[in-house]
Image (cartoon, rainbow over all chains, first blue to last red; front, side):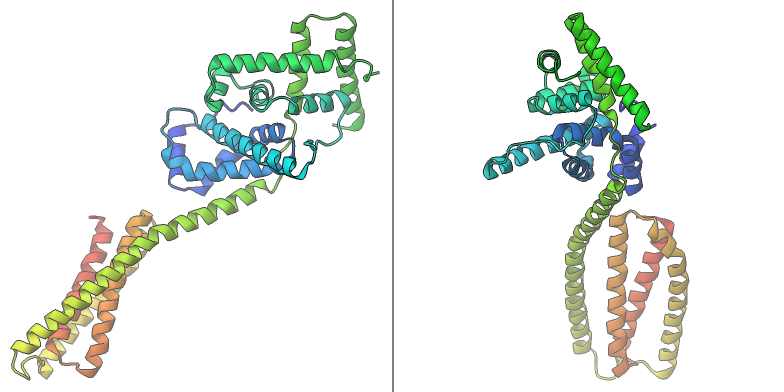
Length: 181
Length: 197
């Protein structure tokens, strides 16, 4: 499901959200649960953190929906909140790890080699680069939308995606041979 | 997808990877391989209980917000009560000081008449309350609290007067005060029904 295809009569729907109609949030969740959880998981690399991020994002949406000015799509707004939550969460996690001197490591389940390798390679990308790549390559969002979500210039988004592809290419086609027989 | 299908799909990816590897494919083909593989990472489903947790949090948040809306109304209610009590005291003192004793007491006939008027108001109010309750449930929350506060304040006034009337049932001023409060309540309920505010 593409996020850009959305709820009919979005304005009316947002008004319901602004009136605190929990049922409207349920519809919104139903529409976006998988891509939001998927994105959070790719960003955090940890299902528990991803679950927390989606919860916090919805709560933040509820608290801030009154300030929504109808300048962007609701999905863009929701994504922006989620990405900010993910960045905060990663920063917090990094600080905790540094304090406890634990090496950062994602907790993906065992999968076939190539997918596992890609997941690990994505999780090793720098945060903003990873965000751009995940939204572009996995969630299929347009670069303009990514620029709006992440508050980055379109040129920066393109550069991040280009650099991410180069890093992943190197990770696959320079370091992987021999491991895959 | 069963294990065989899964293994087969995985083998296809590996084969494609090996082909690209062997022919030293250009970067664009390598990128396409990575982007295609990335699409397959769309698989995770959201945990089944996630919405229940979110819904719980949203409902708690909603409840807290409602309490916050209630707080200023409570202050207003207290302020209104203070004004009413002081006003009633002032009103009481003024009349009892200026009137000769006995003049503020209703005779039996007048008392019966006042009681029957009060009863008529009470019957009308009871009927209006029945009609207004469902309408109030659909009201905007702030307006609902406003009306609830107003009605509660009037009820408190009436209760206080009734208490005073137990000791002095013929007191004309208190009776007048009760009638005014009943009239006020009736008008408020009518307003709710007509949606004039």
